[in-house]
Amino acid sequence: MRARPASGADRPLPGLPHANLYGMDRETLAGALAPLTSRPFHADQVYHWLYGRNATDIGAMTDLPAALRSALADRFRVAWPEIADVRLSRDGSKKYILKLEDGGEIEAVYIVYGSRVTLCLSSQIGCPLACRFCLTGTMGLVRNLAPGEITGQVSVLAHDNGLARNGYRVVLMGMGEPLNNYDAVLRAFRILVDEKGFGLAPRRVTLSTAGVVPGIERLGKETPRPRLAVSLGAARDALRDDLMPINRKYDVKTLMEACRGFPLAPRERVTFEYVLLDGLNDAPADARLLARLIRGVRAKVNLIPYNEAGVPDFRTPDQDRANRFREALLARGVPATIRWSKGRDIGAACGQLVRGPAGPSPAGMTA
Ligand code: SAH
Image (cartoon, rainbow, N blue to C red):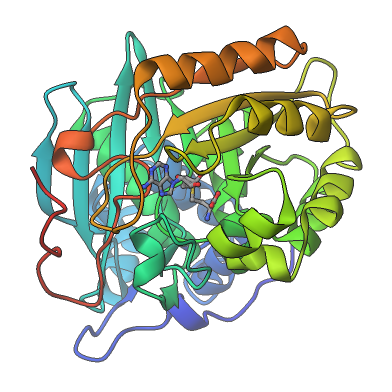
């Protein structure tokens, strides 16, 4: 293993004298510890304390020699994102507003479906893709998150909710386009699925993209890799161009070719998310088009009825209309579920996440 000098997010921030150990991957830790110890396994131990055992301070790393602990404590700190606010939904979901070291804020959501817990993570502050129905899209991109700011969301939410190791799923479906922050997202993913890290099975992590085709192709070659979800939103170019501007770069045909070429494990499926917008993309003819489009991809469809997000022009379809859409898909052999989003009352549902460098949330976002 070759040591790499600390860089980027690993450097001390102005006003903070110590570099943050949290967020360093194995190689970076090896580089950081090299001047302090001649034993490479010490870096592995620190790695395990940070990501496998949720240690928040160096003093707790009790299997390290005391001298090394104190040398580390002189030079480094362990800092997670800070909880700035938590909003509890009537359905049990919680929206966390997390403050990062540069004052930037992101949102992460704790979601419960029965006994199943899912943590929904952000990959960027804001998002550059500007999908018209999505509130995050109105912010533009502020910046990419560092790997430790992505895994940090898991540490904070798992700790705050007393979650057992392995006792949850992770979806990269919060703020941002994960495939536009590819390297940091994959580095975070590797820490999440590392035995000595968070120890999650790769299939328990899902990455959702609005359709960044080169990223999908690259992801298909990774081992291990997260599961793939693709936000479709429309099955034809004219409408998708309008709703999701990224379609003008990678159109529906190009996107579907990338999905068809995505190598799946036995029994694995690609998930297509399809936001249902009343009167715009939710007619039976749209369902037929969608079913035809998906033919040839082992897939399932998640229908997400539009969540009011403070964006004008769009309405939520009623339940009957959503059910008819689903049945039209099922009748054509496409597995489909309707996901009435959790956390709508606290602005934590799909498309409702918006934080920025600082400042309160926009009007209309909270109940
Ligand atoms: N950028 C990635 C990750 C975000 S996932 C992606 O687009 O896949 C967020 C999901 O919420 C996407 O499927 C998006 O289509 C959906 N969404 C956005 N705004 C929404 C809204 N107002 N109501 C329902 N779903 C919405």
